[in-house]
Image (cartoon, rainbow, N blue to C red; front, side):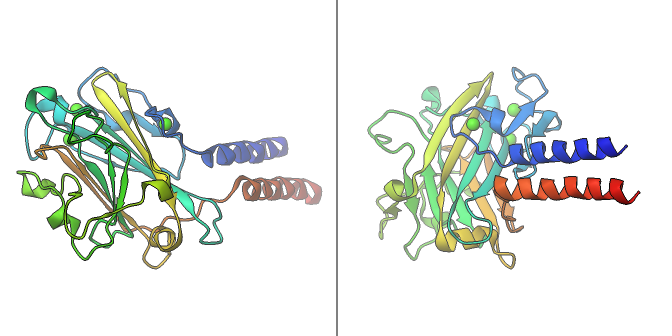
Length: 276
Ligand SMILES: [Ca+2]
Ligand SMILES: [Ca+2]
Ligand SMILES: [Ca+2]
């Protein structure tokens, strides 16, 4: 019995240390979840998704595109997000990770001349977007040097109204208008965004991450007002996903803290044995 308790404590340590490991922004979803369903089926079964750790949050979209049509090519299936804190006890920065399963291909749909939109991010879930990251890989004059860039909304405007909009008003905005006045600030060089796509059958996995610091870290983690909003759609807005998450992100302990916690569990198990 008691040996089992000790073994359990060590097992817990192993699980928790694994849980703190970083996501790699490479278009492969295996560092977020395992999928037990048939990946070659257009229907995405969220009940077959097993998240890799408790720090990952997720939101499921309906099967098929809404409000538009276009079947699997325009379908958004599910979005995932996670915040990794470099120091859970101080505002010293961290990295935000976003993953999304969609039928929409990164290079767009050539036959319809439609493009992937930007990922809009509302730090603190306050109701307006602060950051946009370009996800379209299409190699045209319009999209040249756009993929992977990060813009900060430090102007007075609302991106819901000023971004490039779609015919479906409920899907707005589609992407940042770089020519709007005032122009959004390009923070690509400062915040080290990474964007990658991968494919599994008719599903494409979009992965995004970028550095978070200062006020924006507080916007995610403050126990009084922390939260996160996300928005992504494709040109024409046939499908859209909106996240409005008002639960503050609890700081994730560093592995060294977890080992100490695990040692405490082991110590407790031994003490129990000694006093029995
Ligand atoms: Ca990955
Ligand atoms: Ca689908
Ligand atoms: Ca959908």
